[in-house]
Image: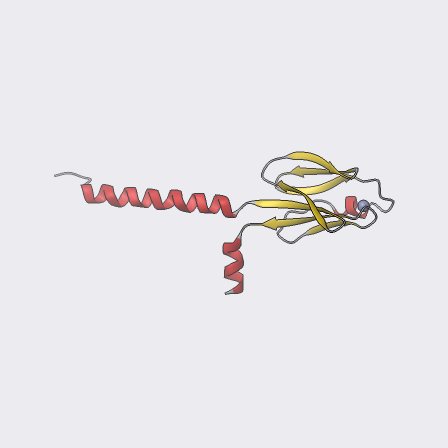
Length: 117
Ligand SMILES: [Zn+2]
């Protein structure tokens, strides 16, 4: 008597395939980006899944641990620097003197649908 029949094997295989598909969907849906705008126009979109540093109009940004923050800015009030790191969908850093804003955009439409429904 066999411990694993062909039918069992087929079930195990389909579970594996479904798991892989779900993982792939989750991986895609968890993509979070920082959208940097200057004067109301999007000038840069950066993925938060990779640590990086970049600048827009002399404002230095840092991406670390799935969040983005302003490291330094030539503006006088430094409100953007004081805002600190943001990471949640919809959160923003605004630098009024430099006309630069950063917005977090998440592809996680699945959870958004659950909230709506
Ligand atoms: Zn500022």
